[in-house]
Length: 433
Image (tube, rainbow, N blue to C red):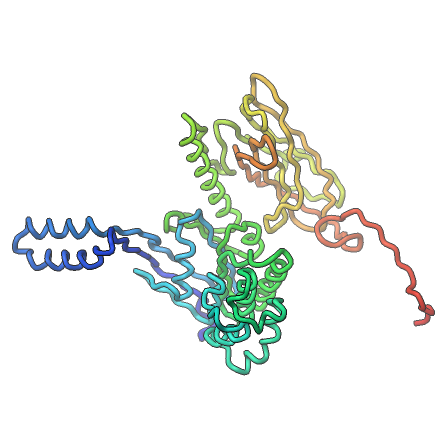
């Protein structure tokens, strides 16, 4: 294996599905095409036969000219609305599905967390299925013997490991399949929504295992709707729309465009339910609508970046417009860490009023955060209750601040929680070293 070669090279991938009008069309379409070729000396008849064939055959273009290169140890996230072609692309890369055009060049062993458990034989026990699947994935008999106990312990299904898989719950089967895949030491790991398997405790263990695999230099291809996980794991991201790559770059930039698509889709659905709906407008900082928009955000003294000591104030001024007729309008101010994960924030309810809808919010946060770099993001929402919110505007301010004090002696993590501690000698202790 050439260490200088990229881990994954996806070139001009296209996928076309042929949809037949009726089961009989599978017979008639090839026959009509052949008759059209045989009757080329009678052009009117040939054209009519060809048209009859096309009427019985429909094409769906799932992917078109998808290109990207993934270097060794790099993590790439792929996002897009449902039906954009994400799962089709992963199946082609994993070798499950053939591409119509283009090719995939993979350098190294691929482990694909796609449809977990789909290859299990329900009549075999969990242990027997682990043996079969691990062998298919390339583990030798010696490697399997060394890792069997670790796989079983990770799946944590107890005595069921020696019971037929048909007696398992769906969650138990997914956990066992996940455990097999992440113990194969892959060079390339493909994850498609697989981090949602099991209960909360198992999900935390799965995330920790993925981080451990990446720390060894494994290449990651991640697909999912968990944007925080994408920010945490990936250095790059691409956006698929109707089978085409429409944006690629840093996770934050691509997520911004993805969220705009989501809200645009929501507005289109609203338009079908009402006579008119406010249209979203894309801006450099995010997007706004005719119902509301965040106009500008400033830090104290008009700077775009501040260095603060632990506990010093962070002052913000927000200029916005919100339609006075919206009773549930609120401005959400989020403080994000360097990975784009919200570490804190506030939802500021806007007062009911008549007439002019322009407002200014003056906010002050006490920056009681750990050493590091943080940034500010804002959203204007119509949220009459906590269960439903319509995003009117999203604003990535470009403002940031840095905490320069290392407070690890006082607390660990990003911020301190109220806590009390007591250290007492244990019973029977003599106090001697």
